[in-house]
Image 1 (cartoon, one colour):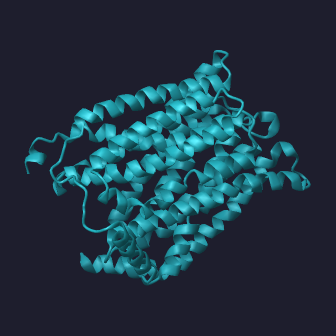
Image 2 (cartoon, one colour; image 1 turned 90 degrees about the vertical axis):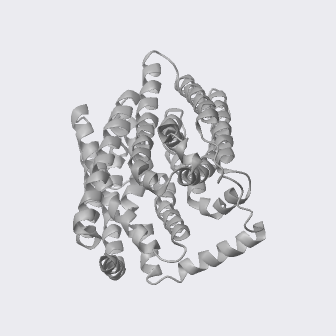
Image 3 (cartoon, rainbow, N blue to C red; image 1 turned 30 degrees about the horizontal axis):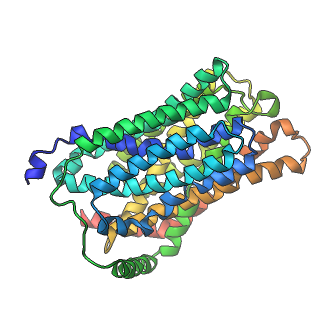
Length: 441
């Protein structure tokens, strides 16, 4: 109780969730842009940067060990310091001739440290706050995570674009961006060494040996696959976001590619504003409205409208590929419309996973659901560049190399069918789990 009385959450929750959001953007978003600028092929960019999501997907497998070795406060601080060194290493490696292999290696380490940091930080949040405080601050932590996303996808890209507009080469501009990130993260780490409270309850669990934890984890894992409707649930989690998975890496490349090659020919500054600022804010707005809609009408009522909302707005990229000379303002409107739809539709998946995980081992089962949903984005996204280049090599009549993006985004629209198929497959389980939630109320 004394911990709660002397703990001011406003001192550390905003900075803690900024520290969660920035590394995710630094690993999953920024490399796509500067690798594209530095001449790496599209298939290599999507395959290797897609693989970097793996630590966030498989983090449930090592999360129990964060509990038994050291405290969550120490884990959090250690991971922040290690990520600081990683950002410095990226800044140093970018101007070299071996930048691709070296930065990928560093990003892989940063992804592992970031995923581990998320485990420890979220655990610390639950330890440091009472149940009432956790409810009060859940919106605050989400808001500052989104602020970190705007800073990571928008602000840092804008900075790189501004540096390049003054004659700096891409390697030098992005190197300065990562030096700035290094300084920011070092300051966050330094702040948290003082601001994160030392909690009496924050200690190694000591509840079991590592072998015992592995045994319990395996039993929990097996129990997840014994849940009713598991096949339908897995199909829904893996397929619901397939159109978005095919767009995630390719949209940034499409925006950066010159007009003569079928892209939009945007500068980094314009990409940072359209995709990283307008897009992220629209995504957040869509998510908020989606939560309100499900809260009032229920998942079963909104599942199909949300599926349509998530899939069909991808058509804006087909339109932009057909008319790439569209003004920048209309491009921002199109990106905002697509991201709003994605944010609104994604709410259905999040609520489905929450409902499906209910019951015994709820926390662990929800973590498994998250892992499978990430796999549904990561695995197709890794193949997106290969599919694009395969389409380009087909030489289909009516589609020259200059407008392969148009054909690719029509392919994405075909992928939208899987979203609707996934909803149909999951229909009986959605009906049952929503009925169970209604009965509990």
